[in-house]
Image 1 (cartoon, one colour):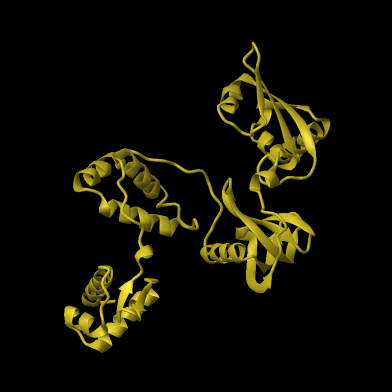
Image 2 (cartoon, helix red, strand yellow):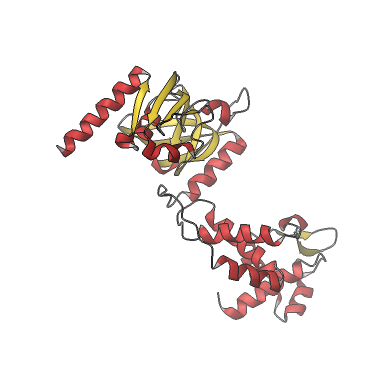
Length: 321
């Protein structure tokens, strides 16, 4: 779009936001253009998602009052916090919803008083943050948007999915209940017709998805906390274990600094080692976490977990023998 036309469309939007109703002839006179050009510029606003409408009672165009949020009085610390988050995630390309968040931050920044804006700029240059590794989320905005729509309208979706558990490409009809971001990726949780139970699907592994016209019935609201229960992370396996680990002094303090699970219990010993106890649903996820501490942790209980970690370390040792 040429600069002159962009300026004209922005001026048209400003006029429509005034709260008054303007007939096409009035708009054409204000902007010094023809009626035909007015309708072309209105079409540009429509394509940009600006919800203008023609008020039959008043006989003119206007923009809906609820399109923009009312102005907010932000404290300096509030403004800096929002701008810092937006600035630091700017390089995290591929995250769904990031684009809209950045646009919102720019609008907030542009509306700040000049002295606060200048102060924020000087402080933000001296603050940085580093995020952990994340899964690739390229091309997921459309998938996320469709799933949000399906959840809101309780519509079934048909998906083809790369299942690491089943080691193949599967097809299932899903009743999507909940979108969940955990660890490094987005997941959708819902009832799977193939598995006849609620399952968790990683969005990045969905090969293709079709939003169906069929609705699904939901007997009771889905509760993410109840579904996850005592799972170590996001995959409950349906069997509860009492896990007991011993961390050596070298890593004990590091482990103790983090709340890894809602049911963890820590016991310190005189030699600086740490006993870590937790009630957990399933052993797969916690096994991988334990392996991350190498020879600085020993599984004391339960026996199935001790055997599993032992076998995994033997296989790892064999690779380096």
